[in-house]
Every structure is written in C-alpha cells, then in structure tokens.
Amino acid sequence: MYDVIINSLREYAISGGAPSLLLIAFVDSAGLPTGGAPDFVLIFLLSMDPHFTTGIVLVAAVTFGSLAGCLVLYNLGRKGGDLAFKHITLEKRIRIRSQIDHYGALAIVAAVMGPPPCPTKVFILSAGAFGMRFSILFVSVLMGRLLRYGIGGYLAVTYGPSALNLFQL
Image 1 (tube, rainbow, N blue to C red):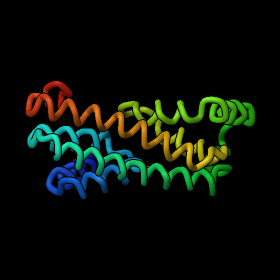
Image 2 (image 1 turned 90 degrees about the horizontal axis):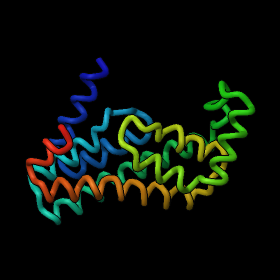
Image 3 (image 1 turned 180 degrees about the vertical axis):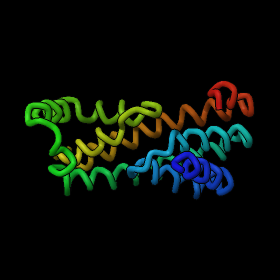
Image 4 (image 1 turned 90 degrees about the vertical axis):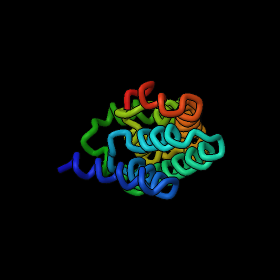
C-alpha cells in the first residue's frame, strides 16, 4: 500500500512540473517520507529538459517546498516537543539539546543535505523542541536544501538524460 502511494506521488510530480515538485517536497519534509521522491523528480525532469532556466525554476520549487515542510515540523516540535521525545531518556534529551545548542546550524545543514534515508525529520523536530531560533533554522534549511538540490539540478542539466544513469534512477 505504501509503495502505491509513493509511486502515485512521483507520477503526479513528474506530470505536474514545478508546482507539483513544490508540493511533493513539502509533503516529504513535513513528515510523510516519500522515498527520495523530490530528488528523483527533480533529476528526472531536468534530465528530460536540461536547460539552465528550467533548472533554476525547479530547484527553487523543490527548495522552497522542502523549506515550508521543514517549518511545519519545526513548529510541531515547538508545540509538542515534550510529547515527541517522551520516550527518550532525560540523559539523551540533555545530550541532544547540547548538540543542538553547540552545533545546531551545522547539524541542520548537514542533515538536510544528506540523501534519503538521512534522519532529517528528527533534527528538525529536535530543533523546534529544544528551542533553536527560527531564523537560524530557516537559514540552515535554506542553505542545505539549496546546496543539495542545486548540485543535483546542476548535474542533471549538465549530463542531460545520462544523469539518470549517473544517479541510478
């Protein structure tokens, strides 16, 4: 059942271009894992239409869709962080909070740049639950996602249809 939903989302995003890519990136980052669908759709669309201007539009769409989804998770962490982390021991919560306090921005950038199945959602929820400043989270997610999707978009535009082989898609 889950695979059917994921495949449907991918097909929808491929057929809908930038608006559907924005939506699927939002859904993926807001909490419903889509198995790397935003990356797949971005690379697929750009490998079929490898133009620089198309790349800018699609990278912007997937970046801002993902950013909006991450902000939803962040706010969930702010509002219900205690519930989200009640199964974690106090010692572990203190350690996570220490990491967020000391390496928060870098941890967020690294987490959102990582390919699936990097546990991005845990980092974003933790940032909200442990009180990371909104502006720091916003800039960190924006930078990380822009780098991740920008690199993928650049490679897809540069290699065209052979980018699908490069990424084994």
